[in-house]
Amino acid sequence: MNRVRLQFVALLGAATLAASALGQTGDHVACYKVKDRAKRGAFTVTVTNAGVTQSCRLTVPARLGCLAIPASS
Image (cartoon, rainbow, N blue to C red; front, side, top):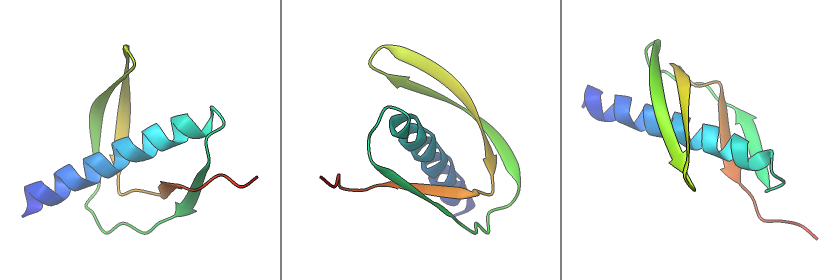
């Protein structure tokens, strides 16, 4: 169970990084402060998108959670 939770936290962190990267290109993203009860730790994640590879260091517990929101005209 602990390993599944750890993988979920790492996946959530990678999604947060991807969402913040998308937010810099003009996509619509809303970020919120979150309280995460996961134990402290650090991970290195490699993200590949459109032929570009980037390594990021994630720290746990999470401080921000970002979600895609619909564009308003």
